[in-house]
Image (cartoon, rainbow, N blue to C red; front, side):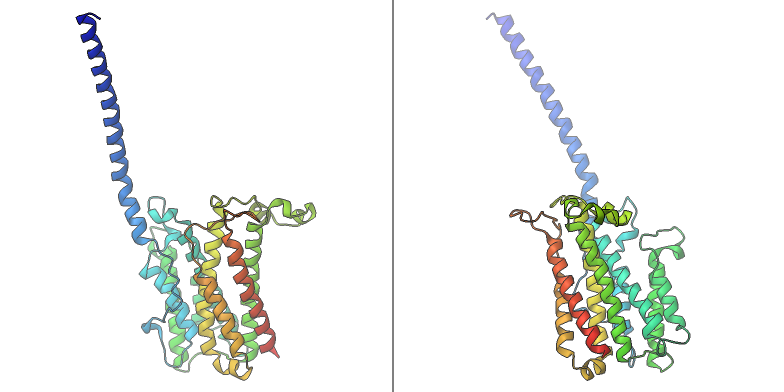
Length: 341
């Protein structure tokens, strides 16, 4: 090798080294830029993400009324806590980190559904004199406000979902204050409690059916069964995707939110209807039902899996949740029958 060729070789290697350094330098700057953009996004997500499923939730002291309904106070507490103590994720737009949190959005929508269902039962059943007569004006307004679409967002503040829920909470509290003052009705008779439990029971059965459609696969149904399904039901049936099944998180947390709200409300209903429960001698069965709902409501997993049957590596969290829901459903059925007699 001549001296000239030696220096040419050194020059070539140096140039290659500079090009590689330049490439990695650019890649490093790109990586740093991505980190700068997404770090605040992740920080906000981690700071605001929460699944508020405290099993020992106490009523907001501002909502407690002497002579009022504890269940109404707890329903108001649930919604007030979600919209004021936390972030209402379902109505967040694409630029907000929690817009991408399937867990939190579905949990809150499950809660909102259960609270609105309870407000409806108060308006149509429990808050009326023997189920007849005019609907209580506050309960009627609460039913409408709390049934508002949870995902609605608007620049016009009064049209957004959160302001509607704020109105719903105030209407519940207004009813409770009037109830405490003897100016409203709360018909605490066995027939009403039995009918209320039956309606909650049927709602849980419908949610159990959704879990079944998510857990079972297309091959588990006959062509005749598939034919009799609705389009929405057929669209839910798919092959189990384990940890990568997007249906798992949606169904798991929507069910969890509903179970948690029903647990809190039914536990409080037990206080409101204490005399009926004692007279019917179903105290033990009631506590068994509440205990099962408590376990189901507090079962939490950040990334629920929908594993196939017999899979020793990937669990199926929906099956476990479905078992607890089914047990609570069975206990509610027994209570409904016993109280009605």
